[in-house]
Length: 250
Image (cartoon, rainbow, N blue to C red; front, side):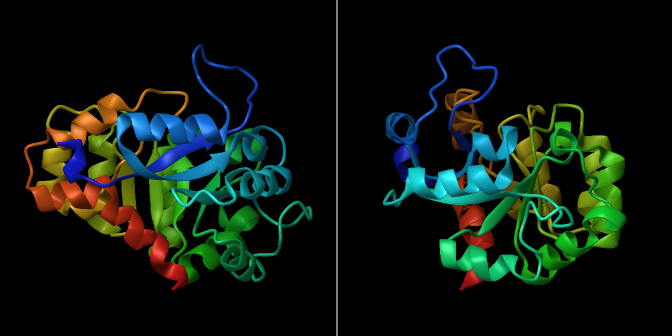
């Protein structure tokens, strides 16, 4: 069944990190090897050093480490520009296009800033205006914060990672209001949850993600491959939704 779906992983990492999980790999070579083994065609990848050290440094390392690997697509980690640790929002889209970067990720709790307009409004305005997808782990925010972000930036393409099996009561009201809200499937462990979101909101609201190398990808693939939805919807979730999101740069 895998052969019929071109899986495009929205949540993969390379690079060494502080607390290494047993059996977890760190290099781009090993990620490519695991992708080939498990049946993942492409991956949106960020670098651990952009998360655990400095975004500028890790983003540069990412481009170097995945250079020439067509199956890997860079995802930059961003933060507000006020301390000169990140380009100004007006300059960022051109730099991203030049580097082939079509998506960004944020770690506001870890990096000690706030996803509020007084702190990151210029950045969020730019992402919304350019339709650049923002990937955000739920351990880096709260549902109240997600609601506030989307209220202030209703056109933002916000993709939530690492949700849980108890998020529907908070997520559904936001999905009803904001078409740009999406979630990855890896940790969305709700019985028949994929089927219900597809029925209520459409398959376009779901993105395949694995969490490699911290988590194993087989379960994430099986969630989609064996979901009780149409083959067309499976193709959207497996990869076509993410490909559409990354097309903003032309």
